[in-house]
Image 1 (cartoon, rainbow, N blue to C red):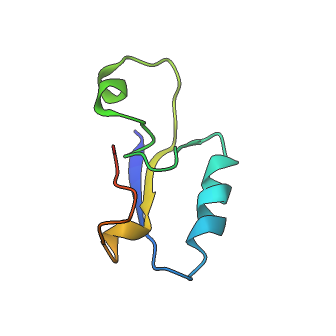
Image 2: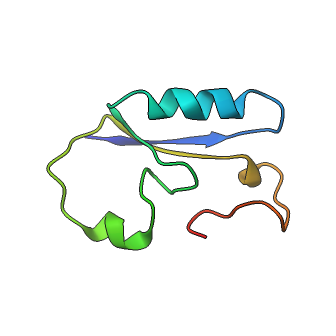
Image 3: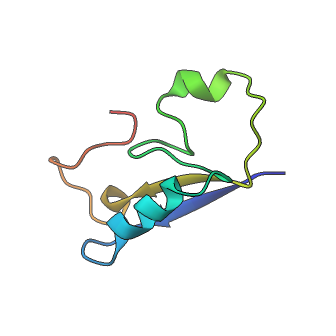
Length: 74
């Protein structure tokens, strides 16, 4: 069973490095700015033959939201 990893990135704490690391590992379902590895809500509903250990959400806006920050599912 896959799990959901939520990374609440604080600014200047290495979030960009960690997000690049997420992208390099095929066992992790991750897309920048996405939710749980999906670009939009329609992708969540689509059946997939791929299996992942973790579905990853990573966003600095969760720890310090502001208007200029790119939102998840913008």
